[in-house]
Amino acid sequence: MTICTTAAGVGCLQASTGVEARHMIRSGSWSGHTSGAAPNFVQGNLAILPADLANDFLRFCQRNPKPCPLLGVSEPGDPRLPSLGEDLDIRTDVPAYRVWRHGELVEEVTDIRALWRDDLVSFVIGCSFSFEQGLIDAGIPLRHIAEGRNVAMYRTNIATTPAGVFHGPMVVSMRPMTAANAIRAVQVTARTPAVHGAPVHLGDPSLIGIANLQKPDFGDAVAVMPDELPVFWACGVTPQSVIMEAKPAFCITHSPGKMLVTDLLDRDFAFS
Amino acid sequence: MTICTTAAGVGCLQASTGVEARHMIRSGSWSGHTSGAAPNFVQGNLAILPADLANDFLRFCQRNPKPCPLLGVSEPGDPRLPSLGEDLDIRTDVPAYRVWRHGELVEEVTDIRALWRDDLVSFVIGCSFSFEQGLIDAGIPLRHIAEGRNVAMYRTNIATTPAGVFHGPMVVSMRPMTAANAIRAVQVTARTPAVHGAPVHLGDPSLIGIANLQKPDFGDAVAVMPDELPVFWACGVTPQSVIMEAKPAFCITHSPGKMLVTDLLDRDFAFS
Image (cartoon, rainbow over all chains, first blue to last red; front, side, top):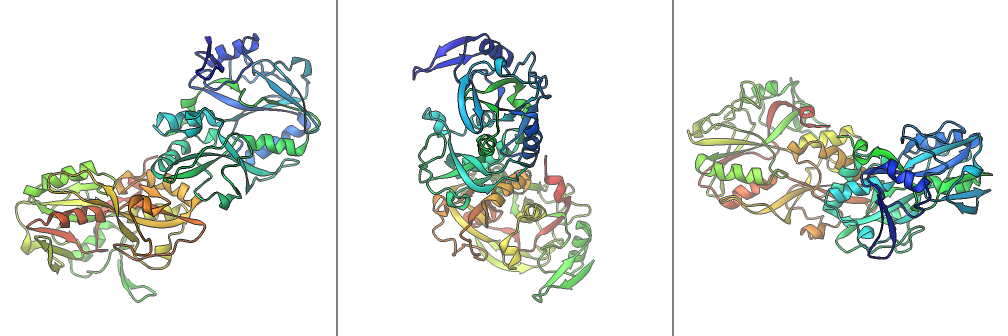
């Protein structure tokens, strides 16, 4: 494992396995972003909720599998997720955490052992890193990656199916591509429903309530060329946005771009 | 088996198997179109060429599998195609044939036994009837079917890969649908490469050289609603168009809409 520096001067973690990446993060050697941290290993979004809200949230994810593909759910109070990784401790193995109280961000920390409670349930939700690797492997260029930007994300008028206190619109990520690549991208991403699956929309953004593609609600705008279509996928920011909307008394999420690296392989998610 | 009359007053053949439909056609009881003739049985486009051109055409199909998915090729001079049907005789089992000399249509007949030659090779090419059934089964409405029209087809600026005397642009069929249905249609039709597979284009028609969707080169125009995209598939009219362009001294094709009904089942073509 190594810590490198990219051409843009940003540090990056390079581990050969998920467990190696987690141990490096746990030891305090790395608190940066995890993009490319352990190539071919699945990364996930994290949400930690008290047990009284966890059942509502579990039902919310079950009802909205495209934006909220659940990779793993812990037992209440148990910081381990053995189905996702050997020796995984959710309290120490993510580079940075955001702590929220009543919907307000109160602190950002690199270890949550001092905050741990017997009623906390961890949810690990699939993220688009895995399907982006599938698109790149299929020879489909992704402009935000080529330009070193975060993917553009938008709130839509596509309603999620509510559960308990959780409700709100779907957030989507957008990648511009030619029609031929969009057709291929549907085929590639349909094979991985555990990481958002096939697109939810393509073409005219106004049909899903997006007024201006150049003004994303999250992430960075990228150009859409005259021979391209915008292609929209359900986004893992949806569950975070829905949790913030519910303003729970207490919750913890990962910091943006600083994900949980698991022992699962991207290829395990593709059915064919 | 029965001969019925549709609401529009058009006759139709209803057989329970491919072989039953072919025997009815061979006996002279039916010379009309074969749409819906034997539900769930694969139908094919027919081209019969002299052996001196057949090798070029075989290579053309191999190089252009999306518009020219070959279901079967006969031995020279042999009117049977045992891989496509029990007791199949290509000289009598198609409701109507078109006979072409030097690129000119010279006659339309219901039996080609008198024209048969020892050097003729039959090519049976997949058609969109099979994948349209897949789309309908997936709950995707097809406007041309709802309106009782032929599908709209267009010459494009997408070049085929030439072989010998055969070359020319790809012809596509177009079906308008919502983005959500277009995404599903990609997934459904990608599973059946033997009947044209996934679309070749969607969205802006001008990007593939189509100036006006309301003026198809073949078939009937249908409306594209404001919340719809035109979705384009490679079309089995491409090989016919390419053969006509080559103006062979002699060739035979099926008459439009009057296809060969095989013993293969649509479902045999889907991989998953």
